Image (cartoon, rainbow, N blue to C red; front, side):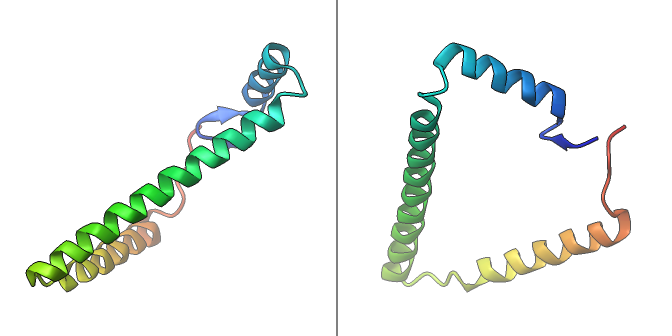
Length: 91
């Protein structure tokens, strides 16, 4: 049985059925398009904030190379955990 975000296939089907009943089949593409645009704007805003922080740190002469090292170490720990535990499935 397939689970997506701890929701089974039957529950997903029921939610989609309710969405179609409430909004109608002709409105669903518009809703999805709006959600996609909103997610894109959020991603762009976070990238802008990251760039502004980086520019500010560079302007102040702050070395931010250590953040890349920390991210690499976190990724290695995640890989090690996945190697030890494998994929964990809920029953």
